[in-house]
Length: 415
Image 1 (spheres, one colour):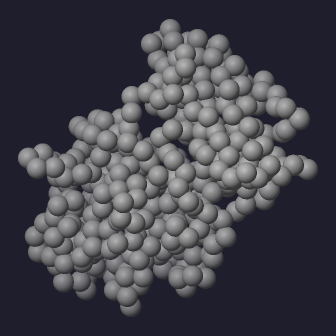
Image 2: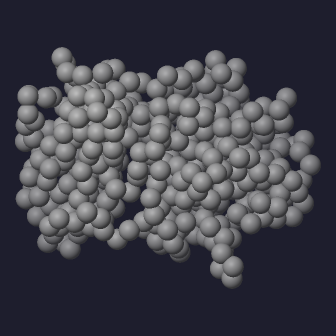
Image 3: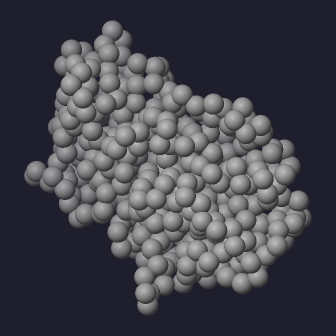
């Protein structure tokens, strides 16, 4: 299963989506030997986060599981997390006055800058009651924070300290993109003392992060370079326990491997007991080639291999149509060129899809269905069409109402 992160968009009359306008000769060739369909990765009307989309593609219904992305990313980042601790996905952001003006600090924060800022957060923030925490910068603007329980009790029933994602039941729902927001506040979602204390702790940490970061030398230099300062920390998707899920092998009776680079996917793979192969982040042709070669090697050792391909999602969030199109073309040239014609694929069922849609006009995840391509030496072909949103909706594979149904269909087809 090859997942193109956020590549899907929203077709509109008279306008081509990035998938439709991209030159993808290698993916097109795979389509000619396969069948197309579409699906809602989590469910109709739900604009999911990536973690919910990935869990669903792996055959687990995120609407029935408290995913605790904060916990999952902590596991993926190698943080010392124990049940009872309060873990949240975090990220460096930019605030000016009483406004949140950029949720990702310009999306150009280097690893070295992030590590320096994380050191300041860990060294300078002192919380009430002596609460201990670990703040870890991961990739780019991304981070995780874990508040240690010690003798305290926390609750995950708190709102997100991030206005772009709203907690709804067990998952967070992406909100339409906006240029700026009010600085967020975390609120308890029930009346328990633990939820009230946890929300207050997140608020305290968030506002003290601004004090620690605003005048940091890294941000002073960024301002001189006309870059946005990373002077605030957003947090979301709180969790206090590891998600209660079966292992992938127990649920599906498949020996499985995952190829990924970011903490969310890495954490999911580790949580599900998959063999995780971490490759450094990158979107060059060489980066995609390495992933294709590793996928083909693992296909001979494992019953199921999942590879997560970053690239199209970020320009979708930034409203950059041409760059999103370019990222799709790079995946085709760097990744699918090495899969096309591979002898192993004649004996293997290949599924190509997306974990969610990220329409460039919305600058955020949406509830739109995503394309699905299935190809192997034994499938009857759709004959015509490309891996696009419109062609997929006409494909003979049909439409799945939930992405968690996909793996069951793949098992049936490969039996």
